[in-house]
Image 1 (cartoon, rainbow, N blue to C red):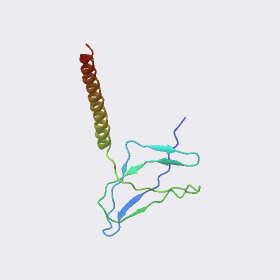
Image 2 (image 1 turned 135 degrees about the vertical axis):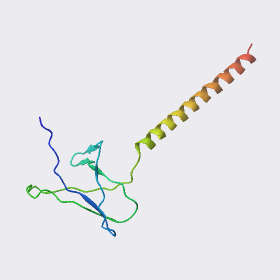
Image 3 (image 1 turned 90 degrees about the vertical axis):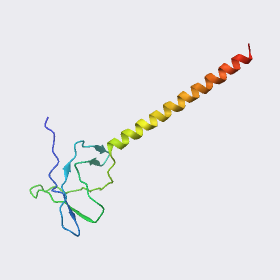
Amino acid sequence: MAEQKTRDLRISVTNRYTGEKLLLKESNFQSTASGLRSHREERYSFEAPEGEYIISYGCDERVREPLNISIQVRKYNSPVKNVFAILGSTLSLFIIVIMFIMLLRYFWLKFKSYNI
């Protein structure tokens, strides 16, 4: 069974004041989310300094079906930052558990020495 390709939307991002077009990169990891009536898919990404940009799209005129799309621009979250946050949280939890075990052992030994 062949995978159905989404049509080329010819998305372009242009700086409003300089007219400079930004380079869109195809996403290496195309994350998707589906609901009962909608489907979300990451296709492209771009990096840009703060400013005002015009995001436009067009599609192949040969396709006559109606277009129902929206474009979201989000702040980039680095996967490396997420990995470090998870590792840091795991290490912190591990340290807390070890300290709790050490405290229990200390009080257990102290309690045991009183009951001799």
